[in-house]
Image 1 (cartoon, helix red, strand yellow):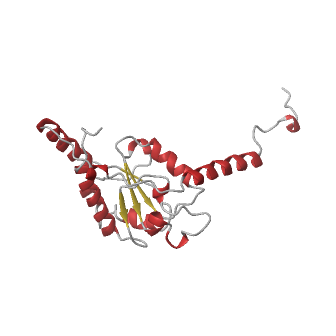
Image 2 (cartoon, rainbow, N blue to C red):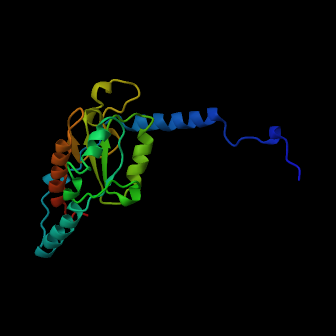
Image 3 (cartoon, helix red, strand yellow):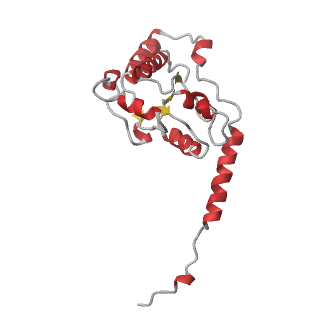
Length: 200
């Protein structure tokens, strides 16, 4: 059996071409992320006339969704340590119905973005968010995730996760303590309680 010459093998893509394609994708995302995405709080402005059955069904569905949020293990920087410590025994995140962080976006419905989001990482974050099943929620944890933090004016840092994802709850701090994250999760529970299937 003869093995061909190594010079006959032509790579499908050159590294320069891959870098150029990735750069174009990042620049396209930057161009589309000029204005922040508005917060998904339409339930405040609109009054939906719901019947007794719909209200009871809403209460049942929202109770199940509220106490069974599965967070996605998605730590980007130093805030991730506070997020993970919130899941350990001392703070015990399981009392909020969140037993453990999921490794797959298909099994999660809550993305806690904790840390500095760079433009290089932004396409991956958006892709993972789109792979999550509905209904899904996003919590921006820490000043870097909320507004870019001290790196907001940097060319490589996204000035807020709400430029590429709709954020439901903001947890300020640098880094915020696990108690702050719990306060944000309680606010998320209250927001989930207001949801209605009549709107969908």
